[in-house]
Image (cartoon, rainbow over all chains, first blue to last red; front, side, top):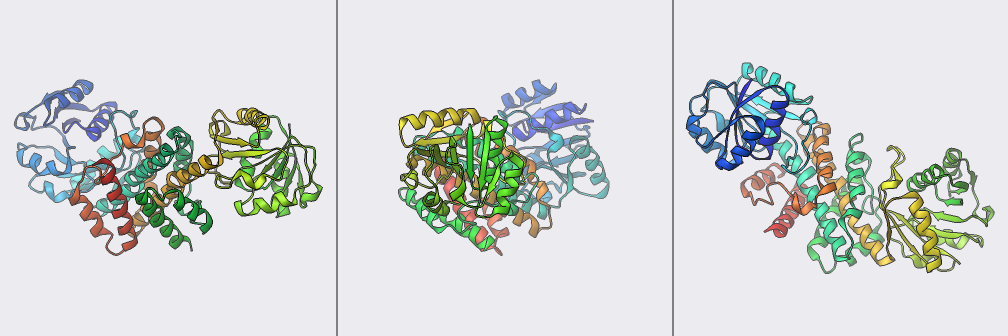
Length: 254
Length: 254
């Protein structure tokens, strides 16, 4: 399969490497920043393109992996192409692609960073949606070649999925940061929390989180919660978050 | 080393198994519930004790791993013993043991559950504190025989550590549960979130959470946050938590 990537960020980089590992051919990488495109292009044996007007028009697949706000502009600048055009955004409606002939969604539910070691795409849930059944069947085949977890997810469901990921990833990482802030103020290193963080994530790989909730709030241990709030009296924002999450836990399990 | 366990819950079970794997000898397991004591005693070749008055008084180490509220009662009922007595609580002051001769703290910063596969104690941070320097040296040797991460942590620091663990473990697990709640309402399974949850925890094993924060709040993407809040309009408690954590992220990184 011949593929063009529009975008060269973390999602594009991870997905491009997964396609290459799969034996697919990457023709061009476009990015608003030609230097960024060149780095990824060199890694995957593609050509870096600085102008959307000159990309191949006969590739099988065009993957738009740019910032959500930039998708509409990319679509408007795209030459007329014969292949399927997909975007990888969790929160952008498929309608943004509706001026194209054959289009769809290829949303990987994972957090990617260039620095972190390559994510194994086989384990990444790939959420697909398409402009019609024929395109859906083709995307299904492509998705299954990359991942063992392929889901059909319409735009409404995809937005819910993206919201759930904000809770389970973005907010979770911020709680790691708040835990670190609490430690730092007492001169202790973040590495003390790392084994606990990993075990907490491992526990819910087999169980549902509702079955393994621990801590003072779930056992309504008011004495400990009061002691914790006293420790947070000089950081009232942390106290507010402590209170809000403890109340939510109490409400959930009472 | 000869050890008596007072308590047979998740912490006692994990720690008792680590001592056995280490070649130590477990004399007795006491629990207010003799059946529970018997289960653990059978696993580790110890005797189940239903009465604190009859436990061996010449063991090297007595580990009190009962609910925080029950520690004082246990101490009051303990016969006069020659060995070191430690408790394993994150939030209970060492002073609760001050009527004893030689005492200290043995606080493992980890989440334990009987159902989850055995935690490797070598990776569990063990936080110790002692009634005097001689006892501290002995506890240090014992702790180092179980874990590669031993920290000297006085009662004030230990309470801060426990608080940070509430953020990084208890609250994090609740965010997994809220993510699941959002998914469930749209008929999607929790398993879709599992790879993302694991990767989010793996990322901070090498990096600091502040260096890898992602999501709409950190990039001040108000459009996406408004769309998420619209999705949460029928679950105002989730909306409040979304708002509080997004505000905290914005404040942290602005």
